[in-house]
Structure formats: structure tokens, C-alpha cells
Length: 315
Image (cartoon, rainbow, N blue to C red; front, side):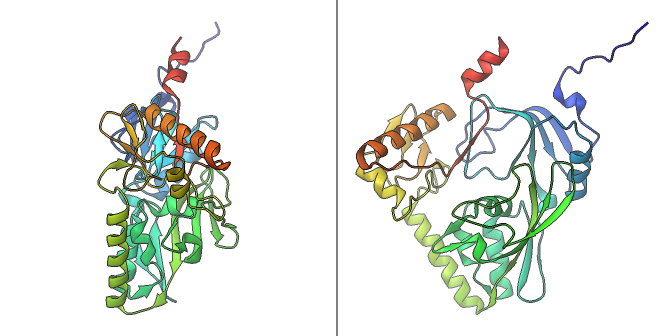
């Protein structure tokens, strides 16, 4: 008599054993800065790089993986994210000094904390990180930048795990950075990065960081449910100026609004859905294109299923 394997009732039943935490149908709206979005089909919080490496090597190859940090520049759609969402936590937040004016940080270390650690070491050049909301992993993937500096200007190399858990280290030249982009496979996960600064005066570095944070507080809606700069700056242009010229400052869709303070920021006024925010962003793009002939590109990363996609899947 031919025996058949019992069908797994949920994706989590197919996951390998881990030292970290696996959970099914994990809500994601509480972890994004927008405070919107559906659930992860499975959430994995690895204890450390070894735990993540073993998981990637053992999980079914056809299961999609999505990595999120603090989700400061991320819009998770209302239908949630299929497959496994990996959220790097405490085991990836170490910040350690090295020789030759270097500092190494785990991918889940906050950019702000890396800037603070560099200041304590008397390393200049990393001050701009205190004005970048997010983590080092995201900064590497997007070549994050602010106040005239970008990640490529300070990065020495970064460490990654590929889809099978194999380790790779790429230098700044190998990553071939461009505006808000780094060149490495989409399914690779950044686990750490090493930066190089220059010797500087700690008081002067602290003063520059305070100036950056003051400027950010006065020019951006940092106390709102927002997600950072929404659109990339087109060559030779400022996205916020184009949005303002198209009359979109204060534009509303549902409970989502274009910020009055800085119109390259979208805001959840309290009850917005991910769909509200995305539709508002698309309306801004339409109006800017109509007014200026320029098509804005999203800087915020939008991932997951639309609510309507989820309904279709359930049929």
C-alpha cells in the first residue's frame, strides 16, 4: 500500500528547527513606521548569524524570504507578505571598533547608534548617519544618504549570506553603489558592515550631529507616522519641489496625507491603510508628471500583497 506524506497545514510546519523564534501569521503593522500592513505568513527572528545561516541552508528552496529591519522606509501592503519574513534583532546590533579608524556594525544596528559610537571613538565622517532613520542593513542595500553624504562614502566592506546560507564579503568597489542602490543579488542578506572614518575631535563631531538632528527635526515630520522620503530626487531636481509645484502639499487620500511640513513625506493621520498611502503616492506621481513632465520614482520600498490580491487567493 502506497503511503503519502501528510500535507502541512501551514508553511511554518515546513520550517527547520531554529534557535530563534518562528511564528505564523505574525502582524507587521506594529513594526513599520507607517503603522500599516498585513501579516507575515511566517516570521523568523534569528538569534545570531549562525542561526540565520543554518535556517537558510535547511529551509525549502522554493519558500520566498523577505528581510526587514525597523521598517522606517517600507510600506507593507494590507494583504501581508507570503513566505518567510526575517527580522534581524539583538544578535545583529553589535558595534565594535577596529584598527585603522574602522568600526564594524551588525545589520540591525541603528544608523543613529553607529554615528554615536563613532563620535565616542573620535571618528568623523559618519555624522550624517544620525540623520538617516533605519538600520545598517538598509543603509547598505539602499546606499542611504543625507546631508551631502552617502553610505558608499564611508563603507569599506559588507558581509552577506546568500539564499543557501553561504557567506560572502564584498568591498565598496564590488558593491558598485549608485544613487539609492547597491549591486548585489536581491536574495542576499546583509549581516554586518565595516566603515572607515577619519580621526576627529569628539566635541566637533557631536556639534555636527546636533546640527543635523536639529535640522531634521525642523524640516521633517519625524513625530508623525511616516516612512522617510517617499520619492527619489530626479537628476538635477528636488522631489519635494516638484511635488509642491504640482499642488500636492496637504493632498489627502483616505486618512493618508502629503505632509504640510515636507511634501516628500506621506503621513498616516491615524486610520490610513497601506492602500491609502500607496494610492496617495501614485496620485502625487500622476500630478507631478502632468505638471512637470517628470516621472517620480518611489524611494520607499513597497512589498507584499494588496488586500484585493489576498481576497483572490482566498477564493
